[in-house]
Length: 519
Image 1 (tube, rainbow, N blue to C red):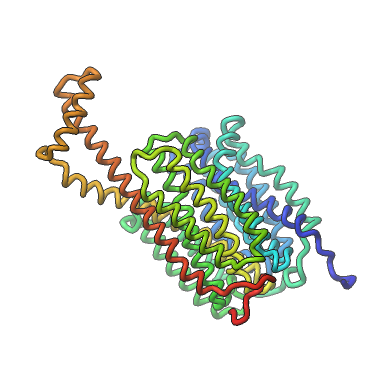
Image 2 (tube, helix red, strand yellow):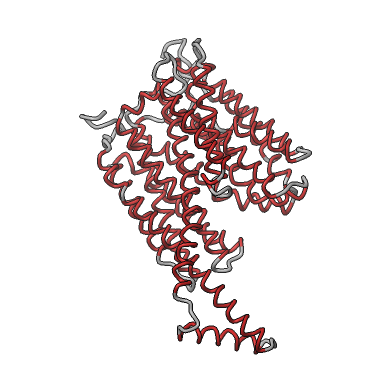
């Protein structure tokens, strides 16, 4: 080692340093949701106004992610990481002292802009700190951080809100942020190619990218509420998003220092890996949104019981990831990915077989299978995707990869919530066709409902109408159940269709490199 070469810190110390602030950011995406009702009441805001505090965070977070690699090259990665941690900590304090809903939304935007950079920065630093043969372990650490937030976030947010107040959902970030800054100052060392460089700023690319991604995120988050393209606002957002992102691609292909280096997509394993991750995240987030809705609206579960159903899947994921990370370098990553796909597809297939009479255990096992599948899929898929990326391009590649991951989740949620609503209307119309007074089964059920209400003290005329109401309520529940089954079945096939994509990706050697004949 030459005297001018900076000493490389221990890889595990680096991992702890970068995962601490990333965990803080990932937690913040889910921890606030549970406190939303308390925030709304405290700040005298309506439901729609309060949800803007979540939408604003997600949109600003999505805007900054693809720019992370470019900003790192411009100012230096360590400086950018420190700036992001400091700004996230300060904006968390400002969110905690918000005096009205408007101020909270503004400070949440600052939180999103500062926090969006940390996952891709953390991933790039981890991959550079670990040797190629240990990329699996590095991604296991990253995957644990990404998975831990959605698992513990709602529980932690509810506990903090009940025991303290909603303000502490934000204040809890302050000590974590201070420790993170101190550790990053002493631990993180920029390689020579990431110490910052002088280059011309592509202002047009910045504007187009920010506008396009922000409009896309707003469209995905608000589309179902405003009936998608039947709303003038949603249609305008879609037009602006498509036109801005299209112009951005044209502009970036012509500038010397693009905001996002799209040439990375010439590596077809990287491109296929991004497509696979997009579909996987759409499946994962779609399921995580649908299952609690199904349990609470159709099965009568409380929020706590619904959380208990989701929790074992998260535990299975947390157990599986480190095991896969340790043995991945001795095995074929494709095999793990395909097994993970099959586990995940099997879990959604089991969900498509749910009825209105399933017990707790029947609902629990598909979540456990999905947790195992996630743990087996996430790490090897990421390893296959980035194995052919040069270290100099890692920041740009991880930024794009994290953007695709986030957008996949948002699109998955938008698709499943829209489909459940539309398919419920479809099944309701089909079921109504069979509900006539001349149907013997219908007449019998209506009479049974009327008899039950008479036993509760209602007069015969009211009980007769009440019996028809019970029949209609049951029909709505059946239509809802069928719509959930349709969407779970669609998600099953979405996962199975990923297998050919994975087979076309280049494998890796035991050293973590692309096999000969790769990209």
